[in-house]
Amino acid sequence: MPDGVSSLPVDRELRRVLRHGTFAQVLDHALSARGLSLERVQFHLAGHGVRVSRAALSYWRHGRSRPERAESLRAVRALEAVLDLPAESLVSLLGPPRPRGRLKAGPDAIDRRLLWPAHRPLLAAVNAPQDDRVRLLDVHEHVLVGDDRGLVSMRSRLVLEAAAERVDRYLVFLWAEGSTAAVPVDPKYCRLGRVRVDDSAGATVCELLLEQRLAAGERTVVEFSSEFPPGHELTFFHHRFTRPIRQYVLQVEFAGAVPVGCVPFRQANVHAPRHLGAPLWIGASRTAHLVVTDSPPGITGLLWEWD
Image 1 (tube, helix red, strand yellow):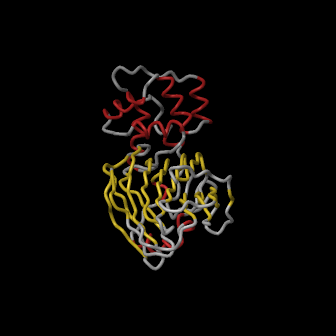
Image 2 (tube, helix red, strand yellow):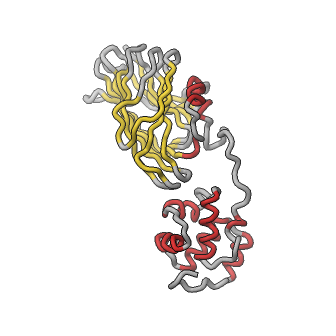
Image 3 (cartoon, rainbow, N blue to C red):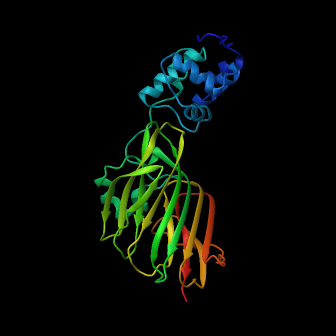
């Protein structure tokens, strides 16, 4: 037992949650009963030779993720000692580890191979890590449409959250209809890793290597630009999300003529029909603004009509 930490009374509520509760419920109850902050828990775990991020402890406590890897299970056993819980009481509540095979589509996720069918060979070429290691929280994209009504450039800002330990990269997918593939340039808060392109499909897969390795629950921001070669007249722009997104901001600026109409749309997948929203106003800035919050996985974007 750590110095300065009194023994936790085995009260009726603790016995109940140990018998009938989940891992998160037992951990939350034990922490509350002890009156320990997550910072103090980190300090005591370090005394056991274990280091866990505050974000990871918070995620475990609130049931947003669970420890599965060998180093995380060692941390759980140390937690049992720090919280004066019976040996294996927390570990036994974790159950068998979740399968770690290929990601399958579910109610809150879409397999990226279904959303990006033209990119499948490129994914194999970069030996892509599982898609569930990083959560995409916020996306801000500024798109420039040129005088020729074609796609000129895009500037992207992404807020990422690690959903696993030791996350050090993120995959970006680009697609340019009717032109050769674009490659990200001018990365900020990251650097470019492996890039694979298929000019015949206008498809690009690129690694963004993060400035630091993230523990589960830690967040970072990355930015990059994409410049597109001349292509077809552009009538829409969208982003494809494999998981729910907290916020998506899309700004489409028209350097030349302004469309006669512009509406937001959403699709469940690449083969589903488009569901249109209310028309958007394009003002003196010659820019259409779309702001979407708490959106489910799928395709979200803007559709416009030229005169």
